[in-house]
Length: 112
Image (cartoon, rainbow, N blue to C red; front, side):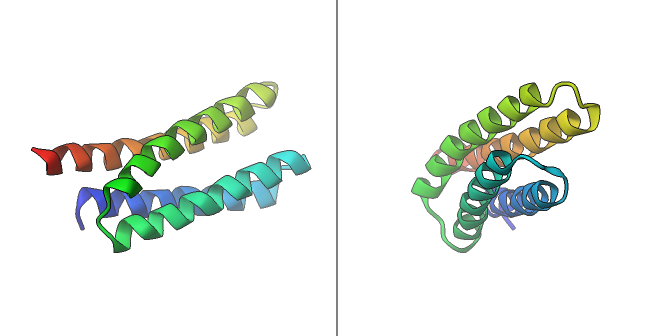
């Protein structure tokens, strides 16, 4: 499995974790809807990155990484009074950032 495929797998893992945590612990409907919608995009991107070699998928991974990080930073601030909630949000934000970074590094290696 190459770096691009590993990044795709990481997006799928992030999606499953985020969806599970949202359905289990979030009580605000806006948070649930937004996190699940972004998780579905992340899962679809992950599958695309595993199955097909595409610079467009890598570029989309970078954009999704920024959106993912902004979303989970916003959730961290929103839930700053709850230690377990914000630490989970920080963890999920870092998983998405890791997936985007790995995808970006796979593109940089391929272009050399």
